[in-house]
Length: 450
Image (tube, rainbow, N blue to C red; front, side, top):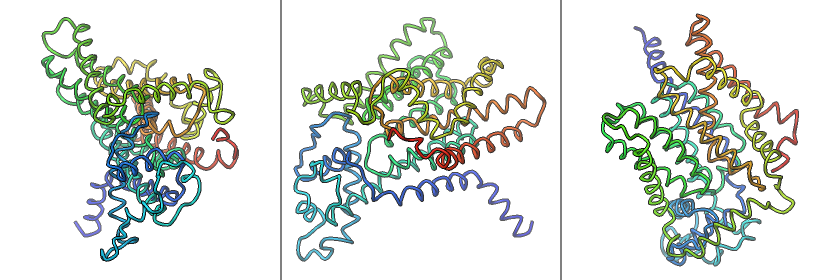
């Protein structure tokens, strides 16, 4: 074997890591130019966590959404302070003007909203940029989780296609480049699915006590997701769906329904525990927590004045579907529906060899649809809220395309692998071009609700 053939063999062996690395590089490259934009909502992440550093009081005194995002931003701020110490302040420690001291001079009250609407002094702008930079890496972490899902379920090709959708997603590019709570929530949402995939591909639990341990672990991970956004609670449907599937495989347990109820209670209890770890002051300051939670629900139901407000039900449902179409094109939406219907009609759901995939992909789809239904029942629309489900929904759609193509090839006697690759590649390229270029050129006002 000569050198060229040896290099070709090495590259071919590393093709999957290299392709996922390419998706990560594209995702980072498309987001770094937007890190200087910011958003007024950073007053509740950067502002409140910076105020914690100033005062030493770690109660956010704000519960319109849980505190997980605020504490994650706090960690990013510590890294940012260490990072900018070489660029601003007093690196030689002669004047005492550390970045934190300069920030306190420039921003004595970091939770003033108007400060986040206009350019601010140099140190604070450099500080915000670094915070956004560190939080942006939640997107590459999501792509790594997609790669793990693909490996676990033997669906690396759909996982790779989902990674490219994630990299190019216009909604994700907007939302992941400032200090927000939705993208980190999307990571933990996807982490629950990865855990379900891991459990589902292992030997089924033989004893109900092992099954209860799995339910407790999944409930805890669900609680971490809810610790960033309340409506991420729909992810519990995935845990419960897997729980019922796995419980049926345990030995010697006839009271399935009773044990399932016990497992549901255990998972919910662990969800509350994890939520309390991410939002520890909700019980201490319960009055503020209850007030902010009720106000947040009320605000989403009554709308945002004349801006981003629609009629709950059919009108908002159309807006929700149109938002999805902005990411995978109407072609992708239609093909996803047709693929799901075809797989169900062709008997795929009854194929015992595909049960693991059916459980993971099916319950992920149900959870995403429940989230979209929840969004359609409110009056206020924000595209950023959908960042909770983008990586999960992209994986479901690309998996449906892949599995439907395999099923068609199998029934017609075609080469299954080649057919699936051609179909997935063609659909992915078409949908990426339509969603991120062609639809924008043909209809510049497609995102008029922003």
